Image (cartoon, rainbow, N blue to C red; front, side, top):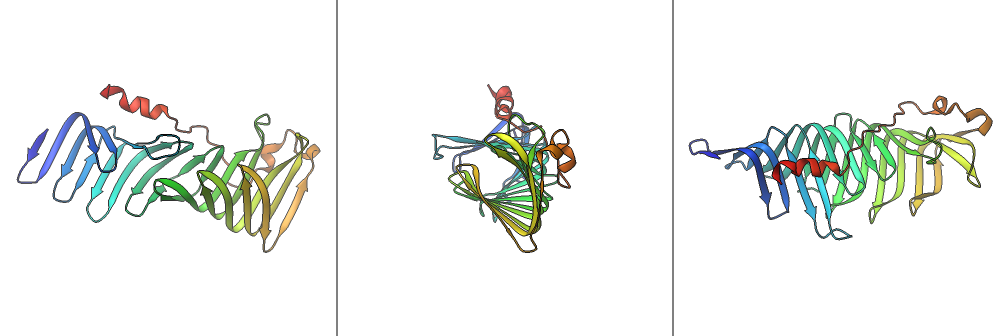
Length: 270
């Protein structure tokens, strides 16, 4: 570590580890530059952010963020900025994007640059995604611009995906469980139907707004509001042709970040 007194700047190289005891955040990297006056720090190579929330239900919940570059600011706000091939994992929530901002002052996580978020078995994509937190717990997820939510309708039917799309999606969570999805502006849904576990076609609906309520992770009610249109496709029309019924903008991304990010990040520090 070298301290440049005239510049009020410190440079550390070689398996750098910095821990904030105040919020239990650890930043790892190959090198770090810290500007003491402004409170800014930059890790420009192999950065990883790790935060263990010991108050979380179940005895601990680790947040892991990996990117090409990471910046920390402790001036007027408390922010962590990750840039380039950003991967984030926490409990059953994971995401990928090109730039993310964790704003701890305002309890926000902002994802930009082809963002993808996985929550449970669902995948969300859009132009940008904003997660509103409360005590490090996810409360709402706003997907803005070309917004889409996708989930497999049945584990045995791998080509069938329930889909929602609109200009904005708002997902609401209670105790880490999805309780409702609101689709706003040009809302369209595609849902596959089953009768006693046997596939039975699909419904496509559209309207000004669509709201879906969940109970214990399962759809309880679908409400379409304003300019309602709907069509039913029978099973004989769908079987073997599922891709032809996908909504515009559909994509299913397999490269979901996993907990192995933490193991990989810690290897040089063992």
